[in-house]
Every structure is written in structure tokens, then in C-alpha cells.
Image 1 (cartoon, rainbow, N blue to C red):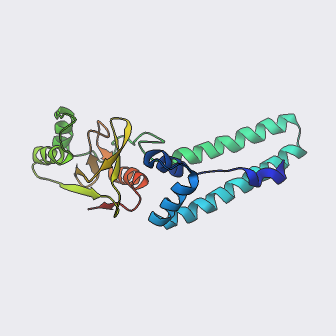
Image 2 (cartoon, rainbow, N blue to C red):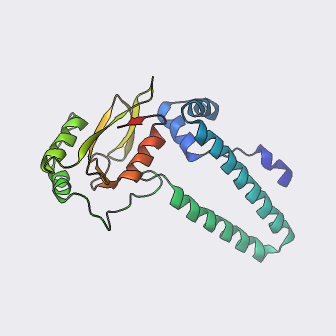
Image 3 (cartoon, rainbow, N blue to C red):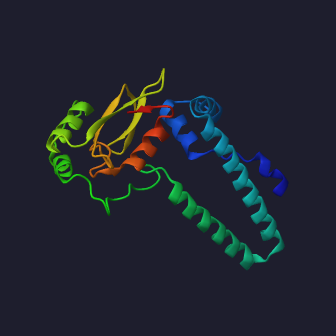
Length: 206
């Protein structure tokens, strides 16, 4: 059983998402694309997969030596710990909820406008961003996201992953991002950026 561990295929969730969104037929095609766009992720994923495989292998060795009760306890502890790590590392909006505003609240005028704003499927993101900026008394700014060369943007809107956007604009007060099609409450800048970069390797945010 231990000798056959190298036959298992462990793929990062990000690779699966890219394959699904962009329509790649195999992990290999998705991996080649990701390696070109974000070489550092590919290197880190390789280290993570190796470390996980080693830990599983070590756990199995212990299980073989121990009894049935120890098997259950060992597996439970290992996967409970691994699950906690994954929940902390998960991509906000996809693998875990966004963190609610806490100590430093978002701009109150922009938050109110975000809750009252109405838009249709045809409303451009730039119009929504401009309306919120105006409601905030022109405090803050509008950020623009452009895809990497030769690609389009993939966004999470109304709970669905949607590809094919040429650009995206959102209002920010400097700490939070206001993107009502993504979330009905302001999102911490670092969490919003993590999601955008996850879905769009190489995208430019300015």
C-alpha cells in the first residue's frame, strides 16, 4: 500500500478551478497555463503536495503498527488538523466566507449606497463604482482590473464564476472593496485581491 502512494494524483484546488473555468480537458493543460502565468505558485504547490504525500505516508506507517483504536484516533487528528489549516488558507468567497467588517468599519456613506443601489444585468461595473464613489463624497477611489495579455477576466458574480470580462472596476475606501455583484457587504481589500488573483493569475490591479 505504501509503495503505491506515488500512483496517486493530488491536484491543488486552484488548478481544478482554472481547468473548469477555462475549459481545459486535462490537468496537464491547466498546469502548463498556470505555470506560465504564475511560476511561483507552481513551485509552492509542488512543495505542498510533496509534504502532504509524506505526511500521509508517515501516518499510514503508524497505522499499520498500531491497533484499530489508534488507527481511528490517528486519522481523526491528522485530518482535523489538516482541515483547520485548509480553512485558514482557503480562498475567500470560494472556499470560505469573507471576513465581516470588524474593528475599522468601512465608509458609512458608501456602505449605505451599496445597500440601496439598484442595477440590472446590463449595468456596467464602472457605473456602479462611480455611483458609490459619489455617495461617499469622492472619498476613496475606483480601482481597475485588467487581465493578463491575451486573456479575459474571470469574476465571481451572484455566486457564479463568470468568465469573459475585458476589465472590472470597483470602488474602495482604501481598506474595503465595494463590489455588490460579488458580496452584499464591503470586503477587506486583502481578501478581495486574493480572490481576484486566484481567478486571474497575472491580472493587473491599479
